[in-house]
Image (cartoon, rainbow, N blue to C red):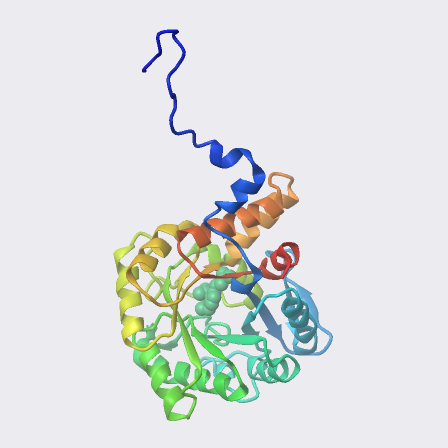
Length: 333
Ligand code: PBG
């Protein structure tokens, strides 16, 4: 270390990182990542009935809502400054082919119609998949004991078209069948829905963090698991190939899911692709924070803000999170 004759440290250290942190106003001015309600998306589970609010035990604070109650909650979300919602349907009846997924008067289709007429500016995104609607809980048709890829595409396309017809702004296929983006884009265009966007769950991993969602949607597979279609958590390169294919097939936006355990994937996708990137902070990520906070182990508000900031810093522009409305109310629109 250089010293002056008097022994005083000369210009040490020239760089003091703490100068950027000492004054809270400057600390905030130099902040590179900011959170705003405008990039958040609130998921909702929609069930049949009227006046229904059924709590989901694995996700304290989340309820399955009948359409009339969804309208109440979606208005709160919208008024908090959150621009978009993502809908999952929980039908009363399930069958082998998941026919309620593409029923013209299915629960999601009715929810979309009501939402778009009550809150026309709220962006409505629909999850396009069969697992909430099939008796076996898989995301596709079962033929000879396997999830059959190509025959499933038609049903997914039909589902997407039925959502667009109901007024969905964005359809979001989450099934992970090969070729679904092309099939859905083609079907939407054929039906005249050329302006409906496709948000692809492009890099969707076979994650244990979907556990609470499956309780909410009653969609746990009755046999086997989803590893033959959702991605192996150990593979990052495959995620980039999945995204590249979905981009080629016509996706308008892409998603990485889950979020916090896959920040490296978010970063790699951000660096390689120019499409708007969405990350999904999934049910298990929500449950971890909620239960830890309930047990007094974590400060919930701080944990939520830190995790969302980390997801944004990694490169996601938008975040789907069950905390969206709460966070937006705290941040202010
Ligand atoms: C449907 C779907 C799932 C999720 C989103 N869409 C469940 C799954 O793939 O098993 C999970 C969302 C969450 O955990 O919050 N395929």
